[in-house]
Length: 260
Image (tube, rainbow, N blue to C red):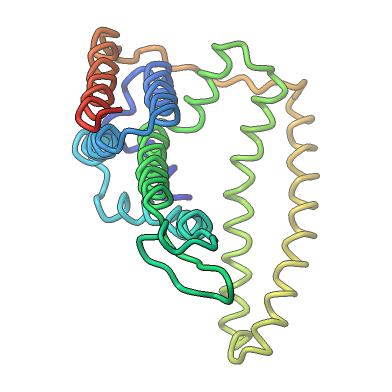
């Protein structure tokens, strides 16, 4: 998570208007969620990857590593959709008899799994484009521009920054335990992990109270005032229209070729 935040500030795409980046992300995301075109999904994955890596100067190994994170959750979802139960073996492409029933893979389940797989990765690539090119402060500023409740924006800002404090605390405590052979064996590892989690909870509450006290001492009244950077580079919205037209064209072309 630290790498995402660090590369968002270092990205060559950061000077672009965050409002336009958020709009582009949600435009592509909604198009992917409302479509079932594998060709369009592959185009979005390639386009977002190319923009994020080559235009944003993001390390390719980091991007590929991030893309593999949702793979575990995706595989669990795929397995539940891929296999079906029926008493008729003729409906399966591949089947295995279990008593009076058959479990196997049908053409419809295989098609559903393929669409789900590419749809998820296309959606994730859109979100990574936004996360790796736009710091959280800029995203929250966009929410503020769209009249999102101030209380919700402040809560998101404080929680986001507090996550890094929590990560640093957990990493420091884990290093201290490991240096004292706290994870030498499985039994000691379980005990050390329990102590780590309980201590993190206590320290988290303490740090939270100290943070709130510090904010009140500095006149916090429910809103954090920060300097805004208005000198953003803007993209012509005509390119957004062209991109959306290309996506809709790919969807129409695939439907035409498949006779839908």
